[in-house]
Length: 486
Image (cartoon, rainbow, N blue to C red; front, side):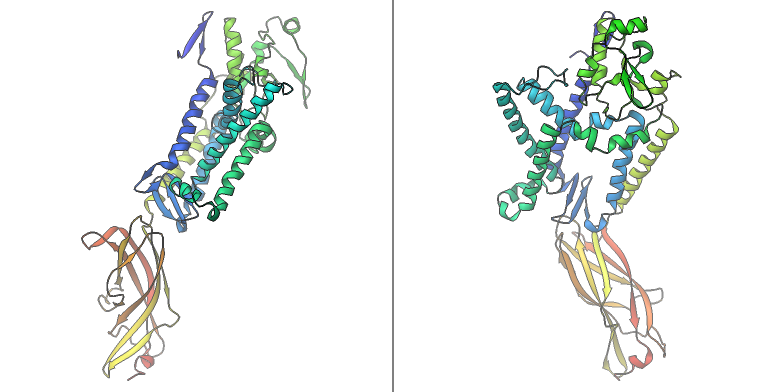
């Protein structure tokens, strides 16, 4: 397809609608394929409440590492807000699933496949449902969308239950009714939303349209009607817009230089049923269908479009060119880069082994194998979890304070032990000393120690990757307790 075509010397670019279709196709394909892609058994994004795991950028994290989620949410919202400051509701018209699904249902199924609607360019006129053949077509359209809604519902769930588990669970539906209920619930909502609620969701339900008005400034680019060239179609009394011109001859009687043909193409093509010639409106989703319509009409007259994707600063106020990289936009970019760097850094600090250490209720035990010897033991509860994908051997070492090296040893366990992935393992660990670590007659001595826990590699050596450090204490008894058993 040629990118541009000429009409009376005016180059007409490829319609924004076609470019949106390309983007919708890419987004849809990525959304469907991404849950199936695995690297080393990890997904690009998977928040599994079933297995208590988070996969992010093909790196697996434990649920205890969900401190990353707020950064992901901040990244999402700041990206959307930044897009709004820069390009208005471009997210709504180009990325939002609501818009994508409506285009699939209205433009592809109802218009292209079933011919229920006469043409894509007229979104105001609903099909005549008094005709029997249209009722049949409508039923088929709803049936086709129901199938797609079920696929969309399943695809959404795949980011929480991976496809390999999803289809396994489907073979035993009685044990997985919650998952199936979510899929059916999402599908039912999509059927109601896309078939019956339609763009009313964008106008009345979605809160984003109210947020956008706070984010806009005079350089925000959006679909705008050039009143200076086209002429004034509406009068604003400060509260509402009143249409003052219905036909071109009336417009030219008021303003002989007005170029608007009052063809209403920009109105009939609008999915949210607004007239772009009224100026900025909350209902506009920046789909740019009105820009395409006016570009085609005015192109036939050898003139540029009266509706363009530009800013108030350039089109309405005519103060100069739109400033894309202004302080507000740069601030959003800096925030986004900062968040991505922070997220990347925290991803690299992921612990490949989780370890919590708690002392037992008894502070210590003292044994006297002979009158001149003693053994002091402290016991701990180690809660371990292997966050890797494979079974591993774990062990640890004690790092006492300077001057006590080698004086505190591991009494139990005596050798490395296996830990399977995804399962918390409870291990009773006993540390022992036969040395006089302190000589205090009045109170027990708290000695800070460090536990270095690690996995063993194939050669039986401590792994540098699967390695964690934890700090705890070793309690050495006072003299009276130490000598009590002699």
